[in-house]
Length: 409
Image (cartoon, rainbow, N blue to C red; front, side):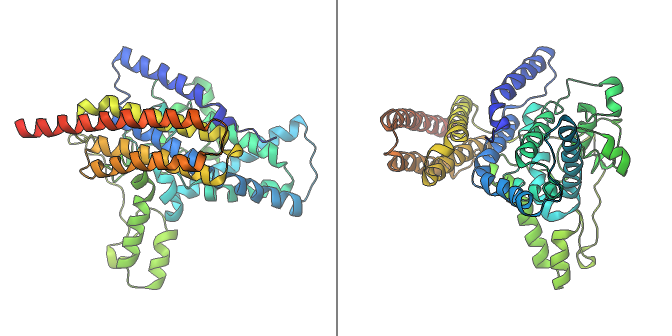
């Protein structure tokens, strides 16, 4: 039986986020901002939702190599588990390093680095498309004969380990800094300071970076994010914006070869005709300012409520998707992503939100048609209609407030 350890860990994630948030608030550290945290968590929900449509296929890709091309029949002893753990971490290092050195891979991985904060919600800020190619890096393990369920288990625990290192609350781990990937090492990895870029790619063991020359100790203050800030809370745009940049660059190039190289060269690469390689600039500490768009503060409670609706729907999908039809999974996934889009648009005060939100309300009610054959349909229908009706009235009220403020200001 294949257990989804990451889905099962979601409650623990939120408990730890709550503890860090309380600590930050008590100490007045300012580690959290509502807009940034909502954005980070939205990416995490979206990543899990989009992953549902590829999870089985990716598992069977590894399984196919294991069943048809494996070299050895390995026993499931403790030592094999230990060797596989090291193997998973080793190939994770190379997948992660290549994701920073090849534009087409960076276009997916960049999502994880967009936040200008550094807290436990950043750990959940994951690309919606990265898992569609990352599994390829681990195929040598299937070829050697490591059992697919063992691989899935240790791969999940490698991911789970990396959750806690996304914090500023822990400064140093003493002698463990020489062996493990720690918060200090990973803060460096998330830095946009030129000396920190493309350093510390480790998953669990920092030894790989020390062996292959990509290690950097945390020294000067870390400025988080990417060198050209995303400047948006839109979860869909966060996943496609770099693809858009690559496409526009490729269109401007003169030769077919350069158009191809745009996608396989490192971030910052441009052909000579477009000015050549653009290196990251030093941080302008004096004028440094994080992206923080203006939005209607009276909508804060509404944003949080809609986010909780998306969280509830997404969580239900993670645990129930194997028991419902694929069409139903798709409808629920679209509703969840549209709800996350609403949160992002409210945080940016987008003018198109009014039309989008009313459309979302009515489409969500129409979407009940796809769930009419499930046992709890009546409860589901009543709950959704109640939530959406109250949301509709609430949203209309918020629009009137915004309109009134505009007229009187």
